[in-house]
Image 1 (cartoon, rainbow, N blue to C red):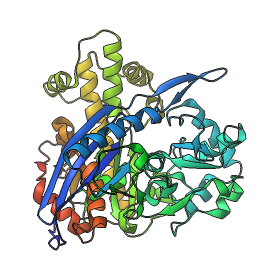
Image 2: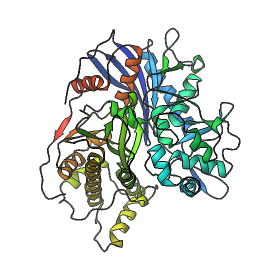
Image 3: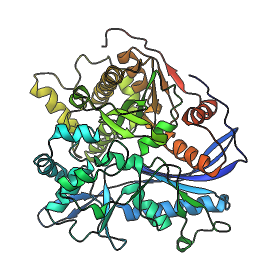
Image 4: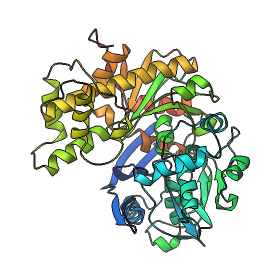
Amino acid sequence: MSTGPAVSAGRTGAVAAVDLGATSGRVMHARVGANTLELTEAARFPNTPVRLWEGDRPALHWDVTGLFSRVVEGLGAVARSEPGLASVGVDAWAVDYGLLRAGRLLGEPYHYRDERTAEGVSLVHARVPAEQLYREGGLQFLPFNSLYQLVHDQETGVSEAADGFLLVPDLITYWLSGQPIAERTNASTTGLLSADGSWNDALIERLGLRRSLFPQLVDAGATVGALLPSLDLPFAGAGPAVTAVGSHDTASAVVAVPMDATRAAYISCGTWGLVGVELSQRVVSDEGRAANFTNEGGVDGRVRYLHNVMGLWLLSESIREWQRRGLPVSLETLLAEAAELPRPSELFDADDPRFLAPGDLPSRIADWFAERGLRAPASPAGTVRVIIESLAEAFAGSVRTASELSGVPVDTVHIVGGGARNALLCQATADRSGLPVLAGPVEATALGNALVQARAAGFISGDLETLRALIARHYAPVRYEPARVGVR
């Protein structure tokens, strides 16, 4: 990759990156300067959804108030070691939101895996055809996209009392700063932004949504406000600023991919596998819509042209099921056992929507094979191996499609996030794509979050290529060459 210009700026400083994923959250303490990039974990905690009874069904929600409590505890740990912290920034998953009235949260946000999300699809498409939604918003179809959830909440009266909504990272930012905003990268996942990055007022009106619900948009790098004194955290002086970062976790992760975007694809691999390329402008074509590729906002006005693949959710939820059955299994042991098995001759479709909901994934995978007259894996290790190979095939196919649709001549694939630790997955992706895979950094999201804050604070300067050069100097990726044949 091109190393880009040297990072330049003034002194080395410290920031805190709050990074909330769909299965866990963390608060990271980063020290950043022209020749410094150090990341230390201050707190890590599970993100466990809760089921709450709602009249006639159990509904799946996020425990955001519990998450916020753990965030504040983590910031307290940072304050004790770095009282002069300059900034705090928050990123999290996309599409989900909290409804507010007079600044008060009306209830824990719904989880995108809650079954209610599909009900909004028919309501929306009856008003605006899917083809038109794609032309205007450039967003891939996912039944839990924010616009489907918002219309459903309106039609069922859930949002009747609300006078505003905030996406999850913006909600945490509001509780830290007192300022209700919508950071643009995550707002782009609602399906309600125009091509110029503003709220699409005409579409909002056609969907019958209230424009007054929608908060002010800001860009990554903007100062939102000061950390609220009422949080009673032991920071020195006036305390740190609260800075908007790429609040969609994938937007922050892509900042920290040490790539040459003119010829590389990225896979941000955690609960989901986000597979795509970085562009300067959107690609809104019939072919892109058919392939379910999305145009989401990136930091500095870049476009994340990508496709969602189910990701490591398939592994984590399968392991939870086996443990519920009382089997003594762990991811590390199963991966080691899976690596000793022959490559499976039959794979399943990792994008099949049947695998979206929580529950017994191993049985659903077995059913997928049985419905086609194929032999399902006979053991947990066999299931893990077929998950790995099926994910790798889906990743490889999405890389090829991203290249074809965007015109980016991909010669390298970067995997960042938790999947970068999974050597079996990285090697399988190299084999099935026929391209070298560069794995790491694992904590790309927190690093991208921290770099945007550090640039805003004046500790470093430069464009994304410059920031990525700093990542490359401090986090050398692990290289996987395509070693096998006959897997495509």
